[in-house]
Image 1 (cartoon, one colour):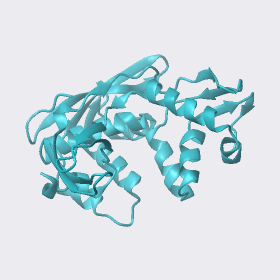
Image 2 (cartoon, one colour):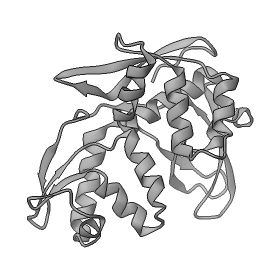
Image 3 (cartoon, helix red, strand yellow):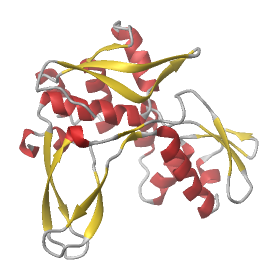
Image 4 (cartoon, helix red, strand yellow):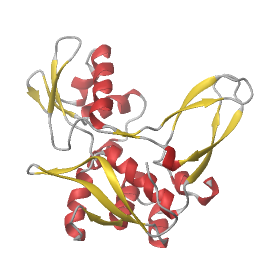
Length: 245
């Protein structure tokens, strides 16, 4: 990922992009965040997904050749969540700084480890599908499913349902599910009743299909020398805090 200097604008190549009538728009120009976006970020009346969606819309100068805000408001929710991740990382870099400092706990010795991450070191995995494209897959059990990429607009549905624990895992599959064994629009209960192996397989397919930012980080503990995996979480206020420099 290439990030320009603090402030100003940057042009970002999206991993998936916006598809409409066979035309793909996968380039977006962003401006740096201002006090308007900081106010949006701190608005507790809005869910976090709606805060982030509004910030992305505010800071988007154009998508492809489209600059009209009314059109952009219709297009942006149709981007994939991995596109949104890419956008937010670039926004953070040009608005606050490229260096992101955060803390994780070693799962082996429980020591607190401070991580200094250069955001422009994150790699973009190209998508193998396009938004709006439905793919058919055969599951390990022999069942058949039709699926699509997860979109930004799906995150609002997810938050509205207020599910926790296992329900959230099932929901992440359900939101992408178009058809199961010939049944269109399967229910959340249908997804919960799927074989565990089928669910694991689908998550692997989603990961390959959607691409996105490689946010899986390998970390070596300074105290016990164990290597563990940490995942970069950007859907939180702290990611945009100047204290995380």
